[in-house]
Length: 571
Image 1 (cartoon, helix red, strand yellow):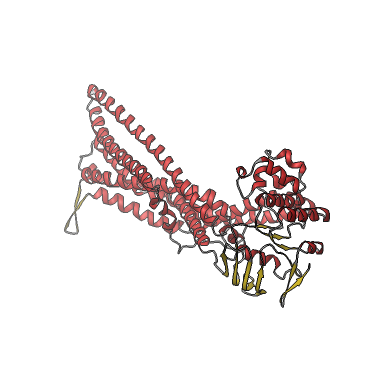
Image 2 (image 1 turned 45 degrees about the vertical axis):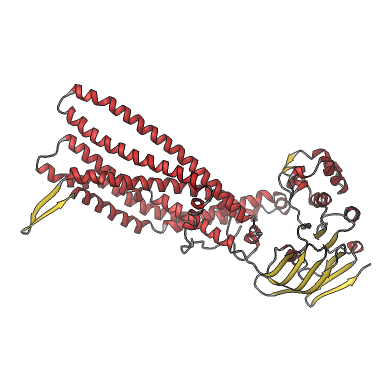
Protein backbone atom coordinates (compact mmCIF):
# COMPACT_ATOMS: atom_id res chain seq x y z
CA UNK A 1 0.00 0.00 0.00
CA UNK A 2 1.52 3.27 -1.12
CA UNK A 3 0.64 6.37 0.87
CA UNK A 4 0.48 9.69 -0.84
CA UNK A 5 -0.14 12.89 1.03
CA UNK A 6 -2.28 14.52 -1.64
CA UNK A 7 -3.21 12.20 -4.46
CA UNK A 8 -4.75 14.07 -7.35
CA UNK A 9 -5.88 12.89 -10.77
CA UNK A 10 -3.48 13.27 -13.64
CA UNK A 11 -5.52 15.56 -15.86
CA UNK A 12 -3.06 15.34 -18.73
CA UNK A 13 -3.80 11.66 -19.29
CA UNK A 14 -6.33 10.80 -21.95
CA UNK A 15 -9.39 8.89 -20.82
CA UNK A 16 -9.82 7.65 -24.37
CA UNK A 17 -6.83 5.35 -23.91
CA UNK A 18 -8.94 3.46 -21.42
CA UNK A 19 -12.26 3.60 -23.28
CA UNK A 20 -11.29 2.87 -26.90
CA UNK A 21 -9.20 -0.36 -26.93
CA UNK A 22 -12.21 -2.68 -26.47
CA UNK A 23 -13.99 -1.12 -29.44
CA UNK A 24 -10.95 -1.95 -31.59
CA UNK A 25 -10.53 -5.48 -30.25
CA UNK A 26 -11.45 -8.86 -31.72
CA UNK A 27 -14.79 -8.58 -29.87
CA UNK A 28 -15.66 -5.25 -31.49
CA UNK A 29 -18.23 -6.56 -33.98
CA UNK A 30 -20.34 -8.27 -31.33
CA UNK A 31 -19.98 -5.22 -29.12
CA UNK A 32 -20.93 -2.84 -31.93
CA UNK A 33 -23.90 -5.04 -32.81
CA UNK A 34 -25.16 -4.85 -29.24
CA UNK A 35 -24.48 -1.10 -29.08
CA UNK A 36 -26.32 -0.42 -32.33
CA UNK A 37 -29.25 -2.49 -31.10
CA UNK A 38 -29.36 -0.57 -27.83
CA UNK A 39 -29.16 2.82 -29.57
CA UNK A 40 -31.80 1.73 -32.09
CA UNK A 41 -34.16 0.85 -29.26
CA UNK A 42 -33.45 4.28 -27.74
CA UNK A 43 -34.52 5.98 -30.97
CA UNK A 44 -37.69 3.89 -31.08
CA UNK A 45 -38.43 4.70 -27.46
CA UNK A 46 -38.16 8.43 -28.17
CA UNK A 47 -40.46 8.14 -31.18
CA UNK A 48 -42.99 6.29 -29.05
CA UNK A 49 -42.74 9.16 -26.53
CA UNK A 50 -43.45 11.65 -29.34
CA UNK A 51 -46.45 9.56 -30.34
CA UNK A 52 -47.68 9.59 -26.73
CA UNK A 53 -47.52 13.42 -26.81
CA UNK A 54 -49.79 13.50 -29.87
CA UNK A 55 -52.08 10.91 -28.27
CA UNK A 56 -52.34 13.00 -25.10
CA UNK A 57 -53.45 16.07 -27.07
CA UNK A 58 -56.05 14.07 -29.01
CA UNK A 59 -57.31 12.26 -25.92
CA UNK A 60 -57.69 15.33 -23.69
CA UNK A 61 -59.24 17.46 -26.44
CA UNK A 62 -61.71 14.62 -27.03
CA UNK A 63 -62.34 14.22 -23.29
CA UNK A 64 -63.05 17.90 -22.71
CA UNK A 65 -65.35 17.86 -25.75
CA UNK A 66 -67.27 15.17 -23.79
CA UNK A 67 -66.92 12.54 -26.54
CA UNK A 68 -66.92 9.49 -24.28
CA UNK A 69 -67.09 6.84 -26.99
CA UNK A 70 -64.15 8.37 -28.89
CA UNK A 71 -62.11 8.48 -25.66
CA UNK A 72 -62.77 4.81 -24.95
CA UNK A 73 -61.75 3.91 -28.52
CA UNK A 74 -58.35 5.56 -28.00
CA UNK A 75 -57.50 3.55 -24.87
CA UNK A 76 -56.70 0.14 -26.55
CA UNK A 77 -54.21 1.88 -28.84
CA UNK A 78 -52.55 3.38 -25.76
CA UNK A 79 -52.34 -0.02 -24.07
CA UNK A 80 -50.67 -1.60 -27.13
CA UNK A 81 -48.11 1.21 -27.42
CA UNK A 82 -47.43 1.11 -23.69
CA UNK A 83 -46.72 -2.65 -23.93
CA UNK A 84 -44.36 -2.12 -26.87
CA UNK A 85 -42.54 0.66 -25.01
CA UNK A 86 -42.14 -1.48 -21.89
CA UNK A 87 -40.88 -4.43 -23.94
CA UNK A 88 -38.30 -2.29 -25.73
CA UNK A 89 -36.97 -0.92 -22.44
CA UNK A 90 -36.65 -4.39 -20.89
CA UNK A 91 -34.77 -5.71 -23.94
CA UNK A 92 -32.56 -2.61 -24.01
CA UNK A 93 -31.65 -3.07 -20.33
CA UNK A 94 -30.81 -6.74 -20.92
CA UNK A 95 -28.59 -5.94 -23.93
CA UNK A 96 -26.86 -3.19 -21.93
CA UNK A 97 -26.04 -5.64 -19.14
CA UNK A 98 -24.64 -8.16 -21.64
CA UNK A 99 -22.47 -5.49 -23.29
CA UNK A 100 -21.30 -4.19 -19.92
CA UNK A 101 -20.15 -7.64 -18.80
CA UNK A 102 -18.39 -8.40 -22.09
CA UNK A 103 -16.57 -5.06 -21.89
CA UNK A 104 -15.58 -5.63 -18.28
CA UNK A 105 -14.30 -9.17 -18.90
CA UNK A 106 -12.25 -8.10 -21.92
CA UNK A 107 -10.72 -5.14 -20.07
CA UNK A 108 -9.98 -7.21 -16.99
CA UNK A 109 -8.19 -9.88 -19.05
CA UNK A 110 -6.10 -7.20 -20.79
CA UNK A 111 -5.19 -5.46 -17.54
CA UNK A 112 -4.35 -8.76 -15.84
CA UNK A 113 -2.09 -9.66 -18.75
CA UNK A 114 -0.30 -6.31 -18.48
CA UNK A 115 -0.15 -6.53 -14.70
CA UNK A 116 1.39 -10.01 -14.78
CA UNK A 117 3.73 -9.38 -17.74
CA UNK A 118 7.36 -8.28 -17.52
CA UNK A 119 7.19 -8.35 -13.71
CA UNK A 120 4.98 -5.24 -13.78
CA UNK A 121 3.21 -6.36 -10.58
CA UNK A 122 6.61 -6.53 -8.85
CA UNK A 123 7.79 -3.11 -10.04
CA UNK A 124 4.48 -1.54 -8.99
CA UNK A 125 5.17 -2.61 -5.41
CA UNK A 126 8.95 -2.23 -5.25
CA UNK A 127 9.83 0.40 -7.85
CA UNK A 128 9.83 4.16 -7.62
CA UNK A 129 6.97 4.58 -10.10
CA UNK A 130 4.05 3.12 -8.18
CA UNK A 131 0.27 3.00 -8.45
CA UNK A 132 -1.63 2.54 -5.22
CA UNK A 133 -3.93 -0.45 -4.75
CA UNK A 134 -3.74 -2.13 -8.18
CA UNK A 135 -6.20 -4.77 -6.95
CA UNK A 136 -8.91 -2.13 -6.59
CA UNK A 137 -8.22 -0.69 -10.02
CA UNK A 138 -8.47 -4.07 -11.71
CA UNK A 139 -11.36 -5.56 -9.72
CA UNK A 140 -13.50 -2.50 -8.91
CA UNK A 141 -12.59 0.39 -11.20
CA UNK A 142 -12.84 -1.65 -14.41
CA UNK A 143 -16.26 -3.00 -13.40
CA UNK A 144 -17.54 0.47 -12.52
CA UNK A 145 -16.02 1.98 -15.66
CA UNK A 146 -17.99 -0.29 -18.01
CA UNK A 147 -21.26 0.10 -16.10
CA UNK A 148 -21.04 3.88 -15.65
CA UNK A 149 -19.77 4.58 -19.17
CA UNK A 150 -22.55 2.61 -20.83
CA UNK A 151 -25.27 3.96 -18.60
CA UNK A 152 -24.20 7.59 -18.89
CA UNK A 153 -23.22 7.30 -22.55
CA UNK A 154 -26.48 5.67 -23.60
CA UNK A 155 -28.47 8.12 -21.48
CA UNK A 156 -26.62 10.95 -23.22
CA UNK A 157 -27.46 9.52 -26.66
CA UNK A 158 -31.10 9.18 -25.65
CA UNK A 159 -31.03 12.72 -24.28
CA UNK A 160 -29.75 14.05 -27.63
CA UNK A 161 -32.37 12.02 -29.52
CA UNK A 162 -35.11 13.25 -27.20
CA UNK A 163 -33.91 16.83 -27.55
CA UNK A 164 -33.93 16.73 -31.36
CA UNK A 165 -37.33 15.05 -31.53
CA UNK A 166 -39.14 17.23 -29.02
CA UNK A 167 -37.32 20.41 -30.04
CA UNK A 168 -39.11 20.10 -33.39
CA UNK A 169 -42.41 19.57 -31.56
CA UNK A 170 -41.81 22.53 -29.23
CA UNK A 171 -40.75 24.75 -32.14
CA UNK A 172 -43.82 23.79 -34.16
CA UNK A 173 -46.56 24.00 -31.55
CA UNK A 174 -44.93 26.81 -29.58
CA UNK A 175 -45.48 29.21 -32.39
CA UNK A 176 -43.93 32.66 -32.89
CA UNK A 177 -43.61 35.48 -30.40
CA UNK A 178 -44.29 38.88 -31.96
CA UNK A 179 -44.18 42.22 -30.13
CA UNK A 180 -43.20 45.87 -30.53
CA UNK A 181 -40.36 47.28 -28.44
CA UNK A 182 -39.28 50.94 -28.67
CA UNK A 183 -40.74 51.19 -32.15
CA UNK A 184 -39.15 47.94 -33.33
CA UNK A 185 -41.35 45.09 -34.46
CA UNK A 186 -39.62 41.97 -33.08
CA UNK A 187 -40.50 38.45 -34.24
CA UNK A 188 -39.01 35.38 -32.48
CA UNK A 189 -39.87 32.09 -34.18
CA UNK A 190 -39.77 29.04 -31.91
CA UNK A 191 -39.49 31.29 -28.85
CA UNK A 192 -40.50 28.47 -26.48
CA UNK A 193 -37.62 26.32 -27.74
CA UNK A 194 -35.09 29.14 -27.37
CA UNK A 195 -36.34 30.16 -23.92
CA UNK A 196 -36.18 26.58 -22.63
CA UNK A 197 -32.73 25.88 -24.11
CA UNK A 198 -31.05 29.10 -22.98
CA UNK A 199 -32.32 28.87 -19.39
CA UNK A 200 -31.14 25.28 -18.92
CA UNK A 201 -27.73 25.86 -20.53
CA UNK A 202 -27.11 28.81 -18.23
CA UNK A 203 -27.89 26.65 -15.20
CA UNK A 204 -25.49 23.96 -16.50
CA UNK A 205 -22.66 26.49 -16.67
CA UNK A 206 -23.37 27.60 -13.11
CA UNK A 207 -23.34 23.97 -11.96
CA UNK A 208 -19.99 23.24 -13.62
CA UNK A 209 -18.51 26.24 -11.85
CA UNK A 210 -19.96 25.24 -8.48
CA UNK A 211 -19.19 21.52 -8.59
CA UNK A 212 -16.02 21.34 -10.70
CA UNK A 213 -13.68 20.38 -7.80
CA UNK A 214 -15.87 17.34 -7.07
CA UNK A 215 -13.90 15.27 -9.62
CA UNK A 216 -10.62 15.61 -7.73
CA UNK A 217 -12.35 15.07 -4.40
CA UNK A 218 -13.93 11.81 -5.63
CA UNK A 219 -10.57 10.65 -6.95
CA UNK A 220 -8.93 11.20 -3.58
CA UNK A 221 -11.81 9.50 -1.79
CA UNK A 222 -11.36 6.32 -3.83
CA UNK A 223 -7.65 6.42 -3.03
CA UNK A 224 -8.16 6.77 0.71
CA UNK A 225 -10.93 4.15 0.84
CA UNK A 226 -8.63 1.70 -0.93
CA UNK A 227 -5.83 2.49 1.53
CA UNK A 228 -8.10 1.57 4.44
CA UNK A 229 -9.02 -1.76 2.81
CA UNK A 230 -5.35 -2.50 2.16
CA UNK A 231 -4.45 -1.70 5.78
CA UNK A 232 -7.19 -3.99 7.07
CA UNK A 233 -5.94 -6.71 4.73
CA UNK A 234 -2.44 -6.26 6.19
CA UNK A 235 -3.85 -6.88 9.67
CA UNK A 236 -5.65 -9.99 8.45
CA UNK A 237 -2.58 -11.41 6.70
CA UNK A 238 -0.21 -10.69 9.57
CA UNK A 239 -2.52 -11.33 12.52
CA UNK A 240 -0.12 -13.74 14.25
CA UNK A 241 2.90 -11.44 13.98
CA UNK A 242 0.82 -8.49 15.25
CA UNK A 243 -0.46 -10.58 18.15
CA UNK A 244 3.06 -11.68 19.12
CA UNK A 245 4.29 -8.09 19.05
CA UNK A 246 1.22 -6.85 20.88
CA UNK A 247 0.88 -4.31 18.07
CA UNK A 248 -2.82 -3.56 18.48
CA UNK A 249 -2.13 0.02 19.51
CA UNK A 250 0.16 0.68 16.53
CA UNK A 251 -2.36 -0.88 14.14
CA UNK A 252 -5.16 1.16 15.68
CA UNK A 253 -3.08 4.29 15.14
CA UNK A 254 -2.40 3.33 11.52
CA UNK A 255 -6.05 2.52 10.78
CA UNK A 256 -7.18 5.69 12.57
CA UNK A 257 -4.84 7.67 10.33
CA UNK A 258 -6.54 6.11 7.29
CA UNK A 259 -9.93 7.05 8.74
CA UNK A 260 -8.71 10.60 9.38
CA UNK A 261 -7.74 10.94 5.71
CA UNK A 262 -11.13 9.57 4.63
CA UNK A 263 -13.03 11.90 6.95
CA UNK A 264 -10.99 14.98 6.00
CA UNK A 265 -11.49 14.40 2.29
CA UNK A 266 -15.14 13.46 2.76
CA UNK A 267 -15.76 16.93 4.13
CA UNK A 268 -14.51 18.27 0.79
CA UNK A 269 -16.77 15.86 -1.09
CA UNK A 270 -19.75 16.98 1.01
CA UNK A 271 -18.96 20.67 0.48
CA UNK A 272 -18.70 20.38 -3.29
CA UNK A 273 -21.72 18.06 -3.48
CA UNK A 274 -23.70 20.52 -1.35
CA UNK A 275 -22.85 23.33 -3.73
CA UNK A 276 -23.81 21.26 -6.77
CA UNK A 277 -27.03 19.97 -5.17
CA UNK A 278 -28.06 23.49 -4.17
CA UNK A 279 -27.93 24.56 -7.81
CA UNK A 280 -29.79 21.41 -8.92
CA UNK A 281 -32.56 21.76 -6.31
CA UNK A 282 -33.12 25.46 -7.02
CA UNK A 283 -33.26 24.67 -10.71
CA UNK A 284 -35.67 21.75 -10.23
CA UNK A 285 -38.02 23.82 -8.12
CA UNK A 286 -37.93 26.94 -10.30
CA UNK A 287 -37.84 25.61 -13.87
CA UNK A 288 -41.65 25.51 -14.14
CA UNK A 289 -41.65 29.31 -13.81
CA UNK A 290 -39.90 29.38 -17.19
CA UNK A 291 -42.75 27.37 -18.74
CA UNK A 292 -45.41 29.57 -17.17
CA UNK A 293 -43.67 32.67 -18.46
CA UNK A 294 -43.44 31.19 -21.96
CA UNK A 295 -47.18 30.39 -21.94
CA UNK A 296 -48.24 33.99 -21.13
CA UNK A 297 -48.47 35.10 -24.83
CA UNK A 298 -50.80 32.19 -25.61
CA UNK A 299 -52.95 32.94 -22.58
CA UNK A 300 -53.25 36.57 -23.62
CA UNK A 301 -54.22 35.50 -27.13
CA UNK A 302 -56.77 32.94 -25.79
CA UNK A 303 -55.24 30.21 -28.00
CA UNK A 304 -54.32 27.73 -25.25
CA UNK A 305 -56.58 24.67 -25.00
CA UNK A 306 -56.10 21.91 -22.41
CA UNK A 307 -55.00 19.45 -25.09
CA UNK A 308 -52.49 21.93 -26.49
CA UNK A 309 -51.23 22.70 -22.98
CA UNK A 310 -50.79 18.95 -22.36
CA UNK A 311 -48.71 18.56 -25.51
CA UNK A 312 -46.64 21.72 -24.88
CA UNK A 313 -46.02 20.59 -21.30
CA UNK A 314 -44.95 17.12 -22.54
CA UNK A 315 -42.58 18.62 -25.14
CA UNK A 316 -41.22 21.15 -22.63
CA UNK A 317 -40.59 18.45 -20.02
CA UNK A 318 -38.81 16.19 -22.53
CA UNK A 319 -36.63 19.01 -23.89
CA UNK A 320 -35.94 20.02 -20.31
CA UNK A 321 -34.98 16.48 -19.29
CA UNK A 322 -32.69 16.04 -22.27
CA UNK A 323 -30.94 19.36 -21.66
CA UNK A 324 -30.68 18.83 -17.93
CA UNK A 325 -29.03 15.41 -18.43
CA UNK A 326 -25.74 17.03 -17.50
CA UNK A 327 -27.27 18.57 -14.40
CA UNK A 328 -28.91 15.36 -13.17
CA UNK A 329 -25.82 13.25 -13.82
CA UNK A 330 -23.14 15.68 -12.74
CA UNK A 331 -22.04 13.78 -9.62
CA UNK A 332 -22.10 10.48 -11.54
CA UNK A 333 -20.01 12.04 -14.28
CA UNK A 334 -17.55 13.26 -11.66
CA UNK A 335 -17.28 9.72 -10.29
CA UNK A 336 -16.74 8.26 -13.77
CA UNK A 337 -14.08 10.85 -14.61
CA UNK A 338 -12.19 10.01 -11.42
CA UNK A 339 -12.40 6.27 -12.26
CA UNK A 340 -11.09 6.87 -15.77
CA UNK A 341 -8.22 8.95 -14.41
CA UNK A 342 -7.28 6.18 -11.94
CA UNK A 343 -7.28 3.62 -14.76
CA UNK A 344 -5.31 5.96 -17.03
CA UNK A 345 -2.71 6.38 -14.29
CA UNK A 346 -2.54 2.61 -13.78
CA UNK A 347 -2.13 2.11 -17.54
CA UNK A 348 0.70 4.61 -17.62
CA UNK A 349 2.54 3.13 -14.64
CA UNK A 350 2.23 -0.45 -15.90
CA UNK A 351 3.54 0.40 -19.35
CA UNK A 352 6.31 2.65 -17.98
CA UNK A 353 7.94 0.00 -15.80
CA UNK A 354 11.70 0.65 -15.86
CA UNK A 355 13.79 -1.29 -18.34
CA UNK A 356 17.02 -0.52 -16.50
CA UNK A 357 20.60 -1.11 -17.52
CA UNK A 358 20.94 -4.72 -16.36
CA UNK A 359 20.16 -6.93 -19.34
CA UNK A 360 19.17 -10.59 -19.17
CA UNK A 361 20.02 -12.70 -22.22
CA UNK A 362 18.43 -16.16 -22.45
CA UNK A 363 20.73 -18.88 -23.78
CA UNK A 364 20.64 -22.65 -24.16
CA UNK A 365 23.98 -23.02 -22.43
CA UNK A 366 24.19 -24.62 -19.02
CA UNK A 367 26.65 -22.13 -17.54
CA UNK A 368 25.90 -18.72 -16.04
CA UNK A 369 27.78 -15.75 -17.45
CA UNK A 370 27.93 -12.33 -15.77
CA UNK A 371 29.61 -9.50 -17.65
CA UNK A 372 30.48 -6.02 -16.34
CA UNK A 373 27.70 -6.20 -13.77
CA UNK A 374 27.22 -3.18 -11.53
CA UNK A 375 24.27 -3.00 -9.13
CA UNK A 376 22.82 0.36 -8.11
CA UNK A 377 20.14 1.35 -5.69
CA UNK A 378 16.88 2.83 -6.95
CA UNK A 379 18.17 6.33 -6.16
CA UNK A 380 21.21 5.77 -8.42
CA UNK A 381 23.83 5.26 -5.72
CA UNK A 382 26.27 2.36 -6.08
CA UNK A 383 25.42 -0.88 -4.25
CA UNK A 384 27.89 -3.48 -5.53
CA UNK A 385 30.41 -4.02 -8.34
CA UNK A 386 30.25 -7.63 -9.43
CA UNK A 387 32.33 -7.41 -12.61
CA UNK A 388 32.74 -10.59 -14.65
CA UNK A 389 31.86 -14.07 -13.40
CA UNK A 390 31.42 -17.40 -15.15
CA UNK A 391 29.73 -20.25 -13.28
CA UNK A 392 30.14 -23.54 -15.21
CA UNK A 393 27.19 -25.88 -15.64
CA UNK A 394 26.80 -28.29 -12.74
CA UNK A 395 28.94 -26.28 -10.33
CA UNK A 396 27.82 -25.23 -6.86
CA UNK A 397 28.44 -21.72 -5.54
CA UNK A 398 27.53 -19.95 -2.32
CA UNK A 399 27.24 -16.15 -2.16
CA UNK A 400 28.51 -14.69 1.11
CA UNK A 401 29.21 -11.33 2.64
CA UNK A 402 27.87 -9.03 5.34
CA UNK A 403 24.28 -7.84 5.37
CA UNK A 404 23.44 -5.05 2.94
CA UNK A 405 26.24 -5.64 0.42
CA UNK A 406 23.83 -6.81 -2.32
CA UNK A 407 23.70 -10.63 -2.08
CA UNK A 408 19.93 -10.92 -2.51
CA UNK A 409 19.98 -8.03 -4.97
CA UNK A 410 22.38 -10.03 -7.15
CA UNK A 411 19.85 -12.87 -7.30
CA UNK A 412 17.09 -10.38 -8.08
CA UNK A 413 19.22 -9.06 -10.96
CA UNK A 414 19.71 -12.62 -12.23
CA UNK A 415 15.94 -13.15 -12.01
CA UNK A 416 15.29 -9.93 -13.92
CA UNK A 417 13.59 -8.24 -10.96
CA UNK A 418 16.36 -5.72 -10.27
CA UNK A 419 17.18 -3.54 -13.25
CA UNK A 420 19.05 -0.67 -11.59
CA UNK A 421 22.66 -0.70 -12.71
CA UNK A 422 24.52 -1.89 -15.79
CA UNK A 423 25.84 -5.13 -17.21
CA UNK A 424 24.60 -8.38 -18.68
CA UNK A 425 23.63 -11.79 -17.30
CA UNK A 426 22.94 -14.88 -19.42
CA UNK A 427 21.92 -18.44 -18.65
CA UNK A 428 19.23 -20.98 -19.54
CA UNK A 429 16.26 -19.20 -17.98
CA UNK A 430 13.67 -21.72 -19.12
CA UNK A 431 15.01 -24.45 -16.83
CA UNK A 432 15.98 -22.15 -13.94
CA UNK A 433 14.18 -21.90 -10.61
CA UNK A 434 14.41 -19.32 -7.84
CA UNK A 435 13.55 -20.01 -4.19
CA UNK A 436 13.15 -16.79 -2.15
CA UNK A 437 13.47 -16.68 1.61
CA UNK A 438 9.74 -16.22 2.03
CA UNK A 439 7.97 -18.86 0.00
CA UNK A 440 4.65 -18.12 -1.69
CA UNK A 441 1.94 -20.65 -0.81
CA UNK A 442 -1.31 -20.06 -2.78
CA UNK A 443 -4.70 -20.87 -1.29
CA UNK A 444 -6.36 -24.02 -2.64
CA UNK A 445 -5.48 -27.69 -2.44
CA UNK A 446 -2.09 -28.73 -1.15
CA UNK A 447 -1.44 -30.29 -4.56
CA UNK A 448 -1.89 -26.83 -6.12
CA UNK A 449 0.49 -25.28 -3.60
CA UNK A 450 3.02 -28.06 -4.21
CA UNK A 451 2.82 -27.87 -8.02
CA UNK A 452 3.13 -24.09 -8.16
CA UNK A 453 3.95 -22.42 -10.54
CA UNK A 454 2.77 -25.36 -12.67
CA UNK A 455 -0.86 -26.50 -12.68
CA UNK A 456 -1.77 -29.43 -10.37
CA UNK A 457 -2.41 -31.80 -13.28
CA UNK A 458 1.25 -31.51 -14.28
CA UNK A 459 2.38 -34.17 -11.79
CA UNK A 460 0.76 -37.46 -10.73
CA UNK A 461 0.00 -38.29 -7.13
CA UNK A 462 2.97 -40.64 -6.74
CA UNK A 463 5.42 -37.90 -7.76
CA UNK A 464 3.78 -35.43 -5.37
CA UNK A 465 3.95 -37.89 -2.48
CA UNK A 466 7.60 -38.67 -3.22
CA UNK A 467 8.45 -34.95 -3.30
CA UNK A 468 6.77 -34.33 0.05
CA UNK A 469 8.54 -37.28 1.64
CA UNK A 470 11.90 -36.12 0.26
CA UNK A 471 11.29 -32.69 1.84
CA UNK A 472 10.52 -34.33 5.21
CA UNK A 473 6.81 -33.48 4.94
CA UNK A 474 5.46 -37.02 5.26
CA UNK A 475 2.63 -35.84 7.49
CA UNK A 476 1.13 -33.81 4.62
CA UNK A 477 0.85 -36.68 2.13
CA UNK A 478 -2.71 -37.53 3.21
CA UNK A 479 -3.75 -33.86 2.78
CA UNK A 480 -2.75 -33.47 -0.88
CA UNK A 481 -6.32 -32.84 -2.06
CA UNK A 482 -7.43 -30.85 0.98
CA UNK A 483 -8.41 -27.20 0.50
CA UNK A 484 -6.98 -24.71 2.99
CA UNK A 485 -5.24 -21.38 3.36
CA UNK A 486 -1.89 -23.16 3.46
CA UNK A 487 0.06 -19.97 3.98
CA UNK A 488 -1.59 -19.77 7.43
CA UNK A 489 -1.63 -23.51 8.14
CA UNK A 490 2.06 -24.20 7.47
CA UNK A 491 4.82 -22.80 9.65
CA UNK A 492 7.64 -20.80 8.00
CA UNK A 493 9.88 -23.87 8.19
CA UNK A 494 7.24 -26.09 6.59
CA UNK A 495 6.74 -23.51 3.85
CA UNK A 496 10.47 -23.58 3.07
CA UNK A 497 10.42 -27.39 3.00
CA UNK A 498 7.42 -27.23 0.65
CA UNK A 499 9.51 -25.00 -1.64
CA UNK A 500 12.19 -27.71 -1.76
CA UNK A 501 9.47 -30.26 -2.57
CA UNK A 502 8.62 -28.11 -5.60
CA UNK A 503 12.26 -28.33 -6.65
CA UNK A 504 12.15 -32.12 -6.37
CA UNK A 505 9.08 -32.09 -8.65
CA UNK A 506 10.25 -29.52 -11.21
CA UNK A 507 13.88 -30.75 -11.39
CA UNK A 508 15.44 -27.51 -12.73
CA UNK A 509 18.92 -27.47 -14.27
CA UNK A 510 19.74 -24.12 -12.60
CA UNK A 511 18.64 -23.42 -9.03
CA UNK A 512 18.98 -20.17 -7.06
CA UNK A 513 18.36 -20.28 -3.30
CA UNK A 514 18.04 -16.96 -1.45
CA UNK A 515 18.18 -17.74 2.28
CA UNK A 516 15.82 -20.60 1.40
CA UNK A 517 16.55 -22.51 4.63
CA UNK A 518 16.71 -19.59 7.06
CA UNK A 519 13.68 -20.85 9.05
CA UNK A 520 14.99 -24.43 9.35
CA UNK A 521 17.01 -26.13 12.04
CA UNK A 522 20.44 -27.52 11.14
CA UNK A 523 19.16 -31.09 10.86
CA UNK A 524 16.43 -30.26 8.33
CA UNK A 525 18.73 -27.88 6.45
CA UNK A 526 21.38 -30.58 6.09
CA UNK A 527 18.75 -33.15 5.08
CA UNK A 528 17.30 -30.94 2.34
CA UNK A 529 20.67 -30.03 0.81
CA UNK A 530 21.79 -33.65 0.92
CA UNK A 531 18.66 -34.86 -0.83
CA UNK A 532 18.79 -31.97 -3.28
CA UNK A 533 22.25 -33.01 -4.48
CA UNK A 534 21.19 -36.66 -4.54
CA UNK A 535 18.04 -35.94 -6.58
CA UNK A 536 19.72 -33.38 -8.86
CA UNK A 537 23.44 -34.21 -9.04
CA UNK A 538 23.96 -32.16 -12.24
CA UNK A 539 22.15 -29.03 -11.07
CA UNK A 540 23.89 -25.66 -11.22
CA UNK A 541 23.39 -24.40 -7.66
CA UNK A 542 23.71 -20.81 -6.44
CA UNK A 543 22.94 -20.23 -2.75
CA UNK A 544 22.76 -17.01 -0.77
CA UNK A 545 23.18 -17.93 2.91
CA UNK A 546 24.67 -16.77 6.19
CA UNK A 547 25.02 -20.25 7.68
CA UNK A 548 28.63 -21.36 7.41
CA UNK A 549 27.50 -25.02 7.68
CA UNK A 550 26.17 -24.79 4.12
CA UNK A 551 29.60 -24.16 2.65
CA UNK A 552 30.29 -27.91 2.64
CA UNK A 553 27.60 -28.39 -0.01
CA UNK A 554 29.28 -25.93 -2.38
CA UNK A 555 32.57 -25.92 -4.27
CA UNK A 556 33.19 -22.16 -4.38
CA UNK A 557 32.24 -19.08 -2.43
CA UNK A 558 31.80 -15.59 -3.93
CA UNK A 559 32.17 -13.05 -1.14
CA UNK A 560 30.66 -9.61 -1.80
CA UNK A 561 31.94 -6.49 -0.10
CA UNK A 562 31.91 -2.75 -0.64
CA UNK A 563 35.20 -3.06 -2.50
CA UNK A 564 34.00 -5.76 -4.92
CA UNK A 565 33.85 -9.53 -5.09
CA UNK A 566 36.40 -12.21 -4.17
CA UNK A 567 36.19 -15.91 -4.98
CA UNK A 568 37.32 -18.68 -2.64
CA UNK A 569 37.74 -22.39 -3.35
CA UNK A 570 35.90 -24.53 -0.76
CA UNK A 571 36.44 -28.11 -2.00
